[in-house]
Length: 273
Image (cartoon, rainbow, N blue to C red):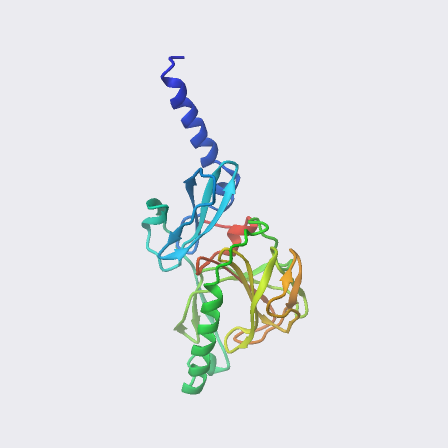
């Protein structure tokens, strides 16, 4: 082999090995509501990265640092950029079409709330947004997550939802069809950062897994944790119920990265393009 080709071959092998890395194969689903894995290169210390002005989860795999970027459902297909160390690193967001779901509710206040309920909803939303924007320095214990409950999916992420014929926000998580009272377990170690009984979400728990990687569980019949409590992977946060805007008992689970709600199916190996 000519001597000048050896470094080039080594570079290609290194790139290909990283491009096919475990984390990339597991998580890189760059669509609206998906996740982009962006290579930040090598460095002695963990680099910082931002996307749309918000800090991003950064982890190390072998010698490379990777940005694990949550892509909001509102992002259009095309080129996006992560900023790190004065550089702008591009990734491409593909297209994904989400199905529709039509739901009939007897309680019309959960479709068109009155002014008093709207005021309550706005205050609760502000609390939850603040929790989603939490960013602790802790590295998540695991990126391949456990299911919070064992049961079939009853509603997928990203579904366009129509309540009593009126379109509302897309479904921001996964629903599991399991009986009331089923224990809900945290899919990774974390800290409880918010609990509440909310108009739409009912009994709700937020768990911070580290660096803006957050799980939210809602519609619970019972909350078994307190704010500030540290949970090991598999720790019970509460029990399945049907509180809030729910037509029956089920477990609703949100996953958020850099304040973007993303498809939890990505993290349990159940993503469908």
